[in-house]
Amino acid sequence: MSRDLSPANAAALAADRVRIIALFEGEFASGTVRLWSGLGSLVWGGRTWAGAGTLMGIGSIEETNEVTANGASISLSGVPLDLVQIAIDEAQQGAPGRLYLGFMSEDWQLLADPELIFAGLLDVPQIEEGADTCTVTISYENQLIDLQRAREWRYTDESQKTLYPGDRGFEFVTTIQDMDLDWEMS
Image (cartoon, rainbow, N blue to C red; front, side):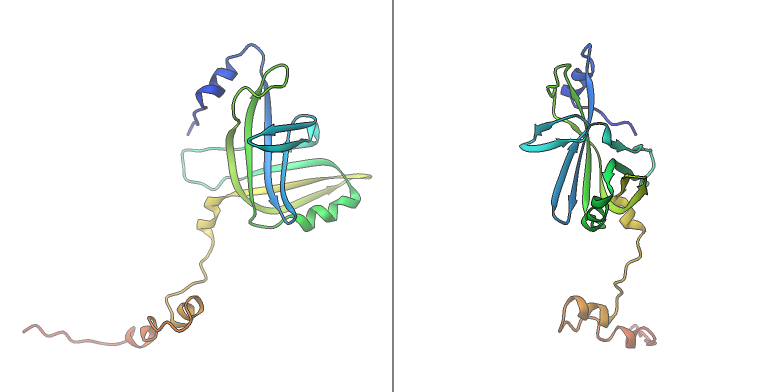
């Protein structure tokens, strides 16, 4: 399934020289982290995005015609060893993350609002250790992955009372499941 760009971004791509940028926004234990693939700070959408430059990497993002739960990954290289534990502690499985694609002019001005290209839920961070620094890679799962998870709730009195204490709606489910009823038509 191909995704259509907004008319403003399509026009930006038609320019003679355009810079393609990526923006990442993720929720962590201490708050939201916003990074972009350039240097310095970028203000967009009323928020400030910190420049990660070439230290930020984005894995491939796949779209198909089928309903599948494809994921994406964001990596940050050059992380000092003493900050790795903080990165692990801050990551909360299931927290939302978003990736945007934007276009800038040659003088680093946004040509249009960046397009959302992926939104998902944080999986597990992976650490690749080097001599002095590490690369932290955070994988995000598409929200469709939730459809593959087993549901713990059942149509039983116990499950119903867990959700709604005092509710007697499922109290007799176990007794009627084996009941034989003879229906007479008059």
